[in-house]
Length: 325
Image (cartoon, rainbow, N blue to C red; front, side, top):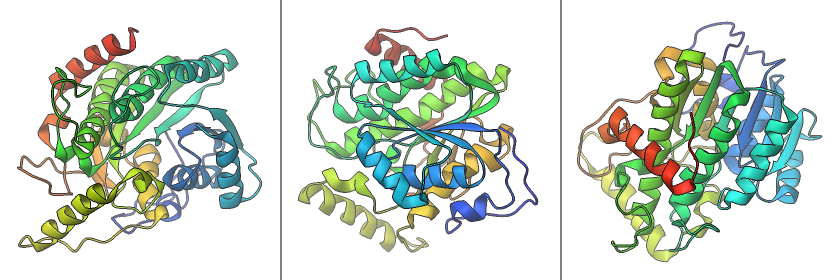
């Protein structure tokens, strides 16, 4: 995706969406953002629309999305809402089919929606909630609308440093043989978000379409509303343990505009060959760190492994019952 950028600037952890997009003109660009009913999704849609893009926002609850987007940036000129429940393949396929029937093309797709550390549960189609919602829902939706992505388009998947908690388990994706752990499940789904970007990038880069995954940072949004007391305590313990490590940088929560900045940076500002097939954080491509335990910064090698990405793609096709070119 190309955009008019007035100057090359250095961005970092405290950069905001407006700072990243300063001087960028997105007039004539059409973008799709999932999860526009709160938090990062609303801010991402607002920032892109403010710079001239036509935005299609997808959300499970259209009433909530309409209220949130109107509150964030007034009249929703340049924004169209579509219903999308990622935990239901019927909803995913209906939303994708509607966009394909409409026929208008996209320059950018940002898969922002997701859930975190939910209690044990299943999607409407019987898959573990987090893997089914965060990965399989987006996997099916994006592949069904891939034909609408113009040459030069980009896909951005919101992942998380939470991917460091666990690799995907292709032998037991639904925790049928292992005890369910909400953070392990979250980690699996966030690793899947990265691996999906890696393989999508490989499959589509000859068409000029690139894909990246991003970590927005620690942000206090509605994503954490599923957390029970034990899950919140575990999260606090991890953060405190990291802060005690020698040389650790102080942890601080980002604002929502700071959290959404890496999404728009990877989507619009970062060079295609630099971000394609990579994992980004704090408005730059992250360092690959082969370490044990949770380090917050960096990306684990297993999340970028191309053969691992191909295996996840094949497993995902089998799980959703569709093959994608």
